[in-house]
Image (cartoon, rainbow, N blue to C red; front, side, top):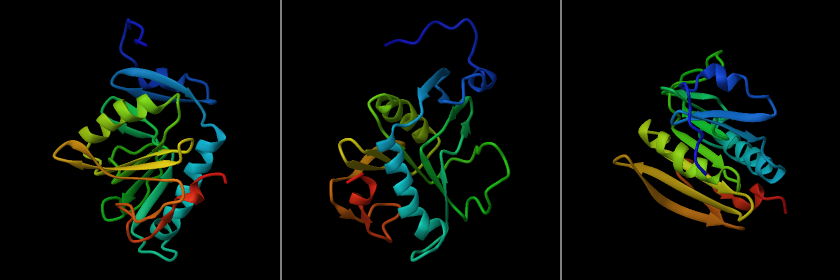
Length: 187
């Protein structure tokens, strides 16, 4: 499905005119408006936030040293997008600013993919993440019950590992803890 011809460049103001019940992003100069996540998507994202955020953001039972944010708006040049989760090491981002968005690329991004967003997440967002040197990206599919962990190597994505179902794994960059994937799914 192609993008409609534009008569003028997409602006941040165009993005702000999208109704709040949609997630609006500008990727490679194109405006995308997608529905808010379905419940399986929301469950997986929330569970990752708890499982990773507790030990890494809060320092409970883990090493700390991170800020883990849920749906932070990020601006990279003309691209404006909202990863489902993103994390910054505190040595790079000493405090979370009182601002509507961040322009500092995260150290880790996580997209919860769905049939309606998978191409955007895999093609456009991962290409922008690579351009911005985001070192780690996870793609989580709550329908297939899989987690793909990618690392950036010489500007290209390398699949580090694929986990699924009831796996218990140590996954970069959070390998200091074991992640029980069953906690991400609904049953």
